[in-house]
Amino acid sequence: MKILFYDTKEYDQEYFEKYLPEYPGIEIEFAKAELQKQTVSLANGCDAICSFVNADVNREVMKRLADIHVRLLLLRCAGFNQVDLKAAKEYGITVMRVPGYSPEAVAEHAMALTLTACRRIHKAYNRVRENDFSLPGLTGVNLYQKTAGIVGTGKIGAAMARICHGFGMKVIAYDVYENKDLDFVTYVSLDELLFQSDLISLHCPLTEETHHLIDIDAISKMKDGVILVNTSRGGLIKTDDLIEGIRMHKFFAVGLDVYEEEKTYVYEDYSSHILSHSTTARLLSFPNVVITSHQAFFTQEALTAICTTTLDNAKAFAEGKTNGNEVVA
Ligand code: NAI
Image (cartoon, rainbow, N blue to C red; front, side, top):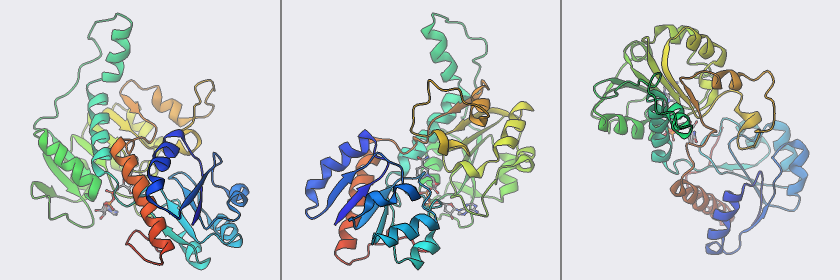
């Protein structure tokens, strides 16, 4: 089994090279190129390719992969909204993912964003470095005894619910299915959640139904001074409406690990560039907004799990087995 690994970063190569000796018969070629229709030909002679969360694996890419006899797409991530699964099925390409590599990694980052934004740690950090030990502008709010509203209580949402519960918060949630393990959570409608929550944390997948779930209408239903955190997918929030809500002083704090425009920037160094027409730059200009670069997953534990599960997936496929990590249309 020969795999072409697209969009390789140094940490990917480090982890995969560490575990590869445990998988005899699997060979990996690491490419820096992103997966797109023009770069499919790099996978000539490979049985599989491995792509990450921001690669747009559309119908044209699928067709070209099938033309060069690639039979397996290994997603080294959980989300698969970026993959045309219908096309994969039509072209006979199996898609496998890493369903739950470390829900706690993402949930802990959601809480890190919550605390950073609502205690103004991002501003305090810079201030103290300049020998400015003053406090005006850094007033925070307590989370204790406040209401956390979790949208989507799957693996990550459940982990976030547990963390919020540990902080002494009342936890309410909205999901299309209730998670019976969360006996301390009260399920409510989405509107109720928007009305009642002091902290809203998004953990549902991006689907047609959830696209722009948080728009100006939803924002207008939120409490004044709400904290909004998104570690799920950028498309859940309509960015222009979020900016309008921030300008109306609706939010005490906003923490974003994902945002609609991220595909252009994420995982790349743009520090010497001028970001023209960027809503991300607009968001960064607000003092109560903290943004990270789709890094909620980025812990040692999660990288290990991503690597070993991806290699397990390749091994299962090579042996003609299924292991439940296949994604179908
Ligand atoms: P999961 O599949 O365990 O849970 C998703 C939950 O959302 C399920 O309980 C499902 O019933 C619920 N849901 C589906 N449609 C819904 C709707 N319309 N309204 C409300 N709830 C709905 O997924 P998991 O592992 O918890 O991941 C959640 C999301 O986190 C992923 O879809 C992915 O987009 C994102 N993610 C972000 C990462 C990051 O680094 N920032 C890393 C990994 C995942």
